[in-house]
Image (cartoon, rainbow, N blue to C red; front, side, top):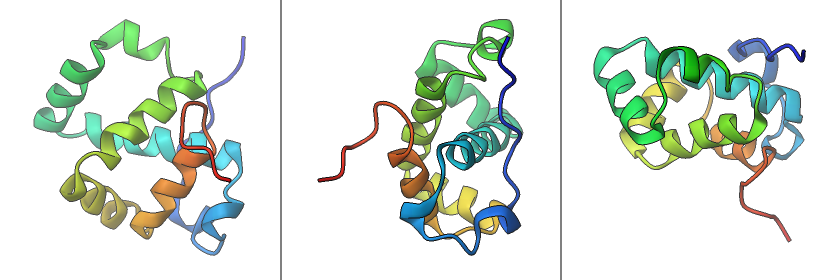
Length: 110
């Protein structure tokens, strides 16, 4: 069984270029974003409603890079939410977009 990446701390990628974010760092940032979403009842309810997942079902997805990409998609769709996450994580908002590009299902760069 594969272990899910650990949540990312801002000091781990704050000095990396957006394009240089590794897939592991991107997954860790997505886990950080998920923890941020689930930490607030309103954000958690919105995310669970949008994803159709909660509780044990949600927990089974933690190691799935495609699911983690979806977490970042959810954050990126709401500018205020993105700004709040970036501030809480101590990262520029662009880092979230860079991380999304490293996970399956994200935009393909030419």
